[in-house]
Amino acid sequence: MLRKAKISDVKGIHALIDIYAKAGEMLPCALVDLYERVRDFYVYTDDENGELLGVCALHICWEDLGEIRSLAVKGEERLKGIGKIMALACLEEAALLGLKKVFALTYKPDFFKRMKFIEIDKGTLPHKIWGDCIKCSKFPDCDETAMMVEL
Image: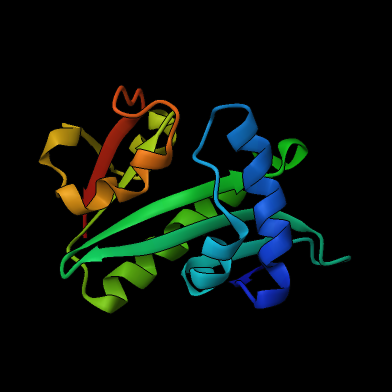
């Protein structure tokens, strides 16, 4: 079941992101940052037991620009469409908010291509978005692919 995250989800969101961050597949997120940004997050839970299966956030960057970030699905639940459901929810929310474009920095460009995102030059993104990147061990040699979709 897809829903907006609650405060009680934050530790589970942190644990799921941490799995992928330790593998070098996404940026780590401090617990304090997750509490501050909990309203950005969607979670996908198991209908039967409420177990957290996936997380995804829509972060507003500017008056016309949002970012899909922290998209993670529990290992054994991958390839079941959960990531797509969460990403589409973020895009729907972005459109309702009046955003014109949404981008993602990703190691999985094919996933985003299937949702009509196109590859872009990272240099075209506003400098404001690089604040989180400074915390990354790969900065400034980012090897993620920048993808964008116009709404």
